[in-house]
Length: 246
Image 1 (cartoon, rainbow, N blue to C red):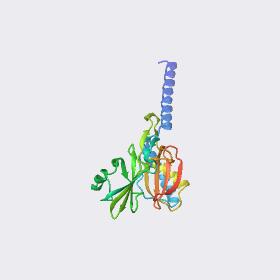
Image 2 (cartoon, one colour):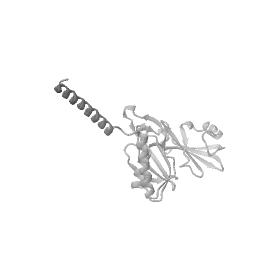
Image 3 (cartoon, rainbow, N blue to C red):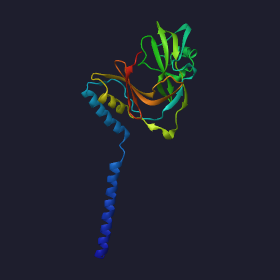
Image 4 (cartoon, helix red, strand yellow):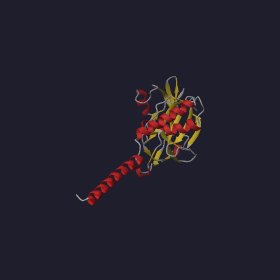
């Protein structure tokens, strides 16, 4: 074999090897991290920051990061104040509510009851709170309140909305992870010694005195002293806390 031809083959072989190594380096540099691994890293960092500020996470932290849109709803003729109804005869209830015999009886008296979900974190003595669902998630500003006396439901106050628009799939965005939302709070807003007791994904908005409202994907984060923080699940903006029990 001629030396010139052999040298050309060697040069081409080294060139191909360099191209392959370069591609592998580029691929490893720009490869997106595994989502579960990324959440684990964020969780570790958030837990570390929380511990340094004596903030406890006594709650189940969701791992879900679905794609969601803002939704437009209308409160209808009852408005944002809702409708209050007194029962002619009190209805005994089980605190579990959903799936109980009382739920079946209540469904005969309360319109669209199956569209609501019980919220143990905002319920309190004498008031059982449920939230209407949209796309399987609670709308935190749309409430059904059952007034209880001596383990009996005596009246209810109901908000109910119609969903006018929920956007299309093309405009949906992946929400921030719960740990990212918590991280913003523990790093910048929560007082030392706070205890996080509940973290839920749902819809929330600034409710004005108008029939039509826009609700955004939101993380609701509650503490043991009944403060509620709302973190916008797309842009991360924080709404300062309000008391969970009114």
